[in-house]
Length: 117
Length: 113
Image (cartoon, rainbow over all chains, first blue to last red):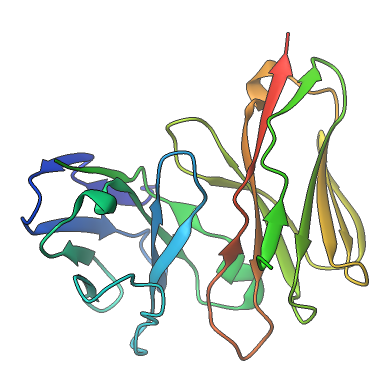
């Protein structure tokens, strides 16, 4: 079946511009996560959606970052007024309903590589 | 203190040897533990999960958990060059807390032919 998809795969933008990244999770997966991974570093949690519950935004680094999700489908991560330090790979993952075990069974998309010039 | 700690490596082992990857975590209430593999330029993929103290084997991979010592490890037997990747340890929080995994920074493994 289809996995997690993300678009675009690569995005080059000028400092100060806004960007929107898209994630399409696996059908039936109620949990959706956004992570950031800078070159050579680990995964940095950004935001988590679970069904119709309020999202966990505790990882968003600043108010320039926001995300939305429509029901249990597509999510978009928006970065306003991009800065050079926003350059990274942005990964989306989805998982089934969030028992502890299912919480860890995350399926990642291919990522969006964002470069801010 | 980081919540999940791993040696960053790089760890190099010869082909056919056992690779041992280690991870410690700070939250004693954590119940579920996961190992992800990430090839260079690719996304992480789940390879092992473990929930109870002891060993769990899956093919050439063995996950080991010791909750008293807050320690989880991954052993790769008969290592192959195709095992060369970064291995990420991930820990699920205790029940009732934030519903997100905490990832370690990863250990880079190189298996030499």
